[in-house]
Image (tube, rainbow, N blue to C red; front, top):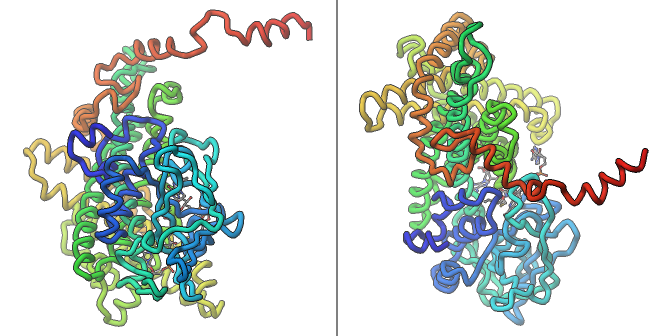
Length: 581
Ligand SMILES: CCC/C=C/C(=O)SCCNC(=O)CCNC(=O)[C@H](O)C(C)(C)COP(=O)([O-])OP(=O)([O-])OC[C@H]1O[C@@H](n2cnc3c(N)ncnc32)[C@H](O)[C@@H]1OP(=O)([O-])[O-]
Ligand SMILES: Cc1cc2nc3c(=O)[nH]c(=O)nc-3n(C[C@H](O)[C@H](O)[C@H](O)COP(=O)(O)OP(=O)(O)OC[C@H]3O[C@@H](n4cnc5c(N)ncnc54)[C@H](O)[C@@H]3O)c2cc1C
């Protein structure tokens, strides 16, 4: 926090710096500096911001974002916590009517936060208006004791990020002033009348913002993992590539290159997509402040798509990097296990990936249908019904591969929409039909999202300002990325007729050549990420390559090595050994 102040970084921008990477097992302040700060910035009105933001900046208020309940995370409309307006006292009464309405998961809620943005069902004048955000003080600002009517605690150990004190929270008819409802977009007036927002999903804005931030953080996490595994693969020698010759660096094995290089490429693909979504988010934020919400649906869908793909890619990539380090990848001091556990949660939080992909699919199907009817659709999905342009680029050129992605994605959407219609005719119920097609719908969303990521990678590399040599390496990486994802999704390309079996063999051949060509660039590429050793926190991935010395030194720090004979020997082992059992 001191560093943020020294560098004049506003609280809500902390999460896109590296400040949180210093703490490996999560961080009790992360939701304060990300979601809480952002909720105040985007959902509170100017007066409320004046009241709370300076206190949050000075860390007098430490907040969290309390939305999820034990019973409902995904289905936000199903939340059960109520905020009922009492016109007599001009207060909202917050209440948790059931066990399932207990808030569950918010980061920092257990012991750290003294306030929260609470999402609760808003009732006024006897009518429910759905989930709305409220600023709620949870603990005394001086003593830190929880306030009467507020019941809270920590939820217990998790797979990872155990320093984050995820918490639970219940309210017992807890009263807050009317002015604690975050009123930038919708309001409850003194007489209890409700003023609705210009778009009814604006209160979901903090989630959209965080999804964009997650894309950024996923590229960083993956970059850390590939740095560790690549440097280690240059230091580690094992087996014989040619019988009788010295053991080579494991990075010489093609299979090792195949494990690492596509993920190095993936770091760039995610990063460039993140930048593009971030740009869009800034434009949308500016438009919203002028009352224009036209591009909000596009931002919502793009942030869902990129959050889902980047969290999945980075989690799989980190696990591949860990396995690529053999046994040493399993040791905590390699840094890889904590990278994995602190990244796999991004698949679930801020919208479980399948659910987000289904949001994308819903948009694809709606846009496809609108396009067929000649209605206007937004730019990113115009291709679904636009005429194909496959034959205009040289065969198997980068542009041709992007076109193949585009046509295959459009083809899959078309096929799935027909399936949906057939299913609808059978079921006579759209929702049942949708569920029966949902595996295919998720595939549509994945392919569309991959197309977007490939396109962003290519267009960024083509326009980037760099020396010819740097550009040439990035072009090779981009080419590897495109081919790698085409080989992983061969079925879609064969089905759409955009690539033949022969094309796929040619591309596969080229991929193997690219692995060999890029091998000498692997270490310079990860060095260029420029992580300090303290941030990597890895015995395998430090700059100086002293892997074995560091592993040995780290082992000396194990608490079990403080004494030659452990207490457990006297307490359990010795009696057992003497017991003749
Ligand atoms: C450090 C981080 C720590 C972690 C923190 C957390 O996890 S915090 C907890 C994080 N928790 C989660 O992330 C929970 C995940 N769950 C959710 O976000 C929501 O429940 C939902 C989006 C899945 C469905 O919402 P729903 O049932 O209200 O909506 P619906 O499906 O009926 O669709 C109706 C229409 O609304 C549209 N629309 C939807 N959202 C947006 C938006 N943001 N903007 C604009 N539009 C949006 C949608 O496209 C559709 O448009 P159409 O087709 O009619 O034109
Ligand atoms: C580490 C961590 C930190 C978190 N931090 C916070 C926080 O700070 N604040 C906060 O409010 N919350 C937080 N959460 C909660 C998080 O946002 C939710 O867990 C997440 O949104 C998923 O919801 P769920 O747990 O209800 O999963 P569920 O929705 O119950 O998912 C279970 C399964 O059901 C499937 N499913 C659900 N709905 C559908 C559907 N419509 N169609 C198809 N399949 C479906 C899912 O795909 C999944 O396979 C955190 C969670 C974790 C793990």
